[in-house]
Image (tube, rainbow, N blue to C red; front, side, top):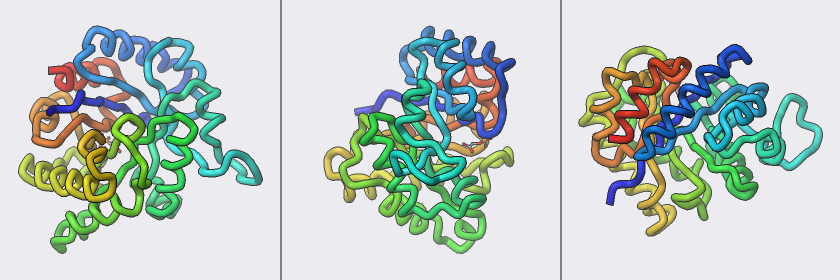
Length: 247
Ligand code: PGA
C-alpha cells in the first residue's frame, strides 16, 4: 500500500524573519493539498517565529544533540527544539556528515534522542560521486541505513531521505531507474533492521528536486516523498512540488 507522501523543505543556513511570508504561503498550500504531508526544516533561530506564523504547520530543526543538556557549546537538545515549536528534526544531512564529520553512529544517537523526545527524525543518507562511480552506491547507502537508523524506529516517528551527495545543489539527478533501485535496496534494509515496521518508514528522495522533475521523481516506486533544499525557499518554487506529492 502506498504511504502518504512527505514533502519536506530544508532551508539550510538560509532565511530570516523576512522569509516568514514564504512559510505562511507554504503552510496555506499544505492545507490546500491534504494528500501530502508538508514540513520545513528552518534555521533554529526561525523555529519559534515560523511556528507562530503558521500554527499547525510542521516546522523542524536541522540538527540536534543526543544529550538532554550539558557542556556542548553551540548545540541544541531535542527538548529545546520541541519547546521552540519544532515537531521534527533532520539528522545526518551529508553537509553535516562532511562539514562536521558526523558518523552514522552519532546520527543514530541523534535520531534516537529525537524520537525518544517525540520529535520525528528525518535521517539522511547518500553516496558520493566517487562511490557511485566505483559501483559502491548501494552498499554504501544500505550500510549508512544499518548504522544510522536506530532499532525501534517506526513509520510514525522516522523517515529516511536518500540524497546522493553529487545531486545536492547541482541540478543533477540520478535516473529514475537508479532511484528505484536504491529505494528498493533501502526498503529491504529497513525491513531487515525493523521487521514489518520497516514497510511503513517513508523513504524520501532528495537532491535537485524542483517543480519540473518532482512529478516524475515522486512517482518512482518506493519514493514516499522528497527532501528539497533550494527549491523550498520560495513558495512559488515549492508549492508545485507539494502539489506533485499530493497527486
Ligand atoms: P537541493 O538540496 O534540493 O538544493 O539539491 C537538497 C538537500 O540537501 O536536502
